[in-house]
Image (cartoon, rainbow, N blue to C red; front, side, top):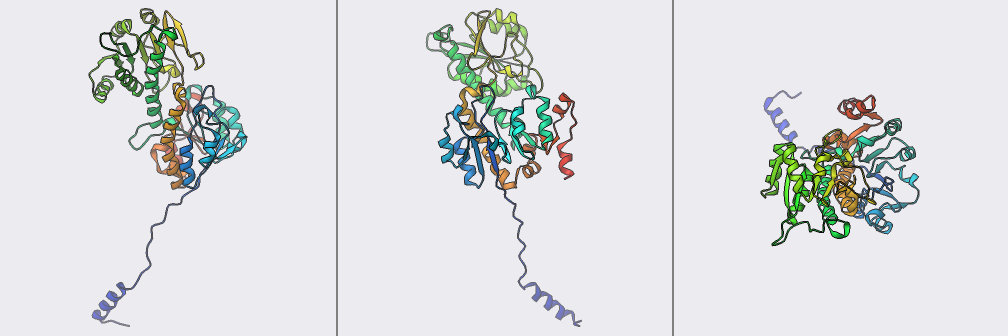
Length: 406
């Protein structure tokens, strides 16, 4: 046994120079996703969840995509384009609902839920106002993990789908109003905008959120005179700063609003309620006082509408006339420009799906990404949405507690 401290010191120094086993970082397990895109069965839904370019990107990253035949027809994408992108074209919707991840635009119908095999992931919109209780119960029975894409947040805390669809709805609402003002649509025969020597069109926008902002931008771009109303002074100030142009803004005062409506050629209803019905801020008497042939576009109609005279219309019969005012009250304006809307959705979800694969699957992404986790309303058959639990009187659990227990 060596006791000399000098010799021991030398041996230790020599030992530290010997080659050692390299400590490598444990690589994150990647997963191959199996995604199914069914044909949308909802009334007048023409959008598709993924465009061919997005499918090509996913397939190039090692994922498998099945799409039901003619799913992209409403957005002018052919089966051949999807096939060329690497998707598998299916003629039987039952095959689609056997995939691990079912990715669609509208919430699933009861028939579609019945086709699901169970223990899958569903990514689609969640419309609380029309979501039947029986569908939630069936999803829970089949141990489905359901993600509402309109409640997913990005790294900045923004809801990207809600914002993008709001941008589309705001811009399109002005284009719709411009058409309805023309003579051949029984309008007043005026151009939305202004030219030298002719008074510009008067546009009133009710709501200073995303829809209101982009409606204002589109109207200003055409040369119209714009007035914006909102209940929040901070939102009006933000809108003013973001647009960079001095426009008329006002808090929602009934007398001031009534005065502006009497002079308006176009009124855009762009109010949004975080939960429940949109506040009805324009009374029937205010509509009666408006000019004959003026146009009302109620973008808020999917939450009940902010005009007392509004009633739901559709893309085939989009308008009706009441008190001489043309009303456009179609809930799903984005389907009017379905190709643009489909590209917008794909731009949001392509990176999310690729990240999901890199993380190892949907449940791993739920654990690691709080923004994506915010969209989960059913986790492995357990309801995690407090709102849905209270609305339908169903038991629910906090998803954070569920994840801690696994």
